Length: 278
Ligand code: C2E
Ligand code: MG
Ligand code: MG
Ligand code: MG
Image 1 (cartoon, protein in one colour):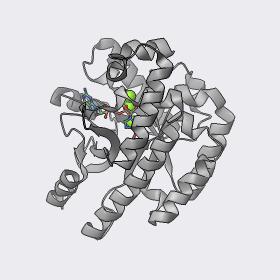
Image 2 (spheres, helix red, strand yellow; image 1 turned 180 degrees about the horizontal axis):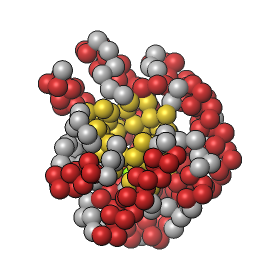
Image 3 (cartoon, protein in one colour; image 1 turned 60 degrees about the vertical axis):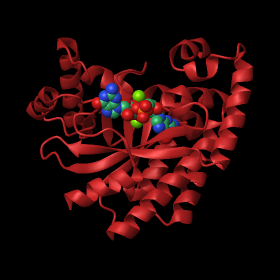
């Protein structure tokens, strides 16, 4: 697993160092100081209704404004942060920042202007014993409503401890959070788990959507049918062309994200965007 990530997405930390342990120590120190120096920033990618093309939500996505490396994307540090466990500290910062961003947005707009903001949750963090307690502490601190947030979890992670996951999903749903399954179709889990998981939204992974071929079409249609059957919203990720959007309209996929509509933008641009739509 570590090897795979190393070859794949960790170009950022592999160039100058040979040893993995060393890399992780470096990254841990870097993340601690990056939090202190305010180098991380949350971006927001709009989510739209397929039918009306209205913005209904946004996914919060982290970026690292690194003083030497420049603008670093999450695939270059999130997997390593998960391996070392530092992701738990980082996500505490992420909750804090998203909640204060949303508070400032409400101050300006007078109300919460969306259905929800989606937050990516690392399974490493989610399966930690104090996850629910810490999340609710952040909610209270910023005086936000759980109803405003959708928590994105991944199938593959959840399967490591499905009982614990189900218990936490139920508890957080009772407080008002909603849940989506991210990267759907890419994990190792079986469809039979889906009916056990009390989630609200299935996010079809962008690998099926971006350069859609006939096989992908069949998979997308199957997921949309499953969504209808189980009464779940289906969101397609990675919509880059109007042809694919038209196709999603035809098959009654519910919502989408993608560069066709918007990339992820900083809070200021996102607020301006919502303001222009009012
Ligand atoms: P994800 O949760 O599946 O997020 C969707 C990724 O697809 C984002 O990449 C987004 O910018 C990208 N994307 C959206 N629409 C399109 C499109 O039309 N075309 C293409 N080519 N890409 C599109 P990003 O921001 O680089 O994030 C990558 C992954 O890093 C995320 O995948 C998520 O797993 C992780 N991540 C990002 N932010 C966070 C965070 O705050 N916490 C945690 N735990 N993970 C995060
Ligand atoms: Mg996501
Ligand atoms: Mg995804
Ligand atoms: Mg992904």
